[in-house]
Figure (cartoon, rainbow, N blue to C red):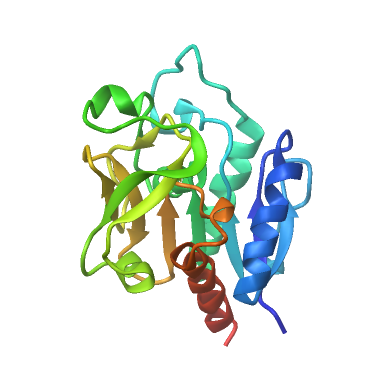
Length: 223
């Protein structure tokens, strides 16, 4: 049987995001279940978790200050933080995408740069689903084992980024200006957060490999 993967999305925009997630998970050998703050979500129902992108995470979760341009969804924040913690406690793998990478960090006690490009003057700001941002994957990381260490070109839609790392996490990739672009858990279970949106880059072998790694880990977690 295909591993079941819970996928969290926004109530507002999930209808257009989830099909991309589901297709990537299907190609990787899994079966996706859509979750949002209006749907019952139980980590016991699935073998793995994808936390998708969307609105900014409330800075109340990490003692930050609310910025005027932030668009927040406290119900989704609470849902995803709970699911990440429950998945890790149950030894179930997690893939965080953009906002999801940030939530992985916050759930583990880290925080964010709310205006990331103010802190990284040499990082080029893009807001596109097309691959225009160049990132470097660090050697001897799980991400390097999945996608290799050759330079990678990705898309970018984010304004926030990881600042202080949470417990049991390490940086796995940075952009040309030093901004964190991927984080990963240093011990089991598998947990990887990427700042870009691999679901829109389904034609790229290295992006599909991220979903395959999640589904493979989910299959192993059932044994």
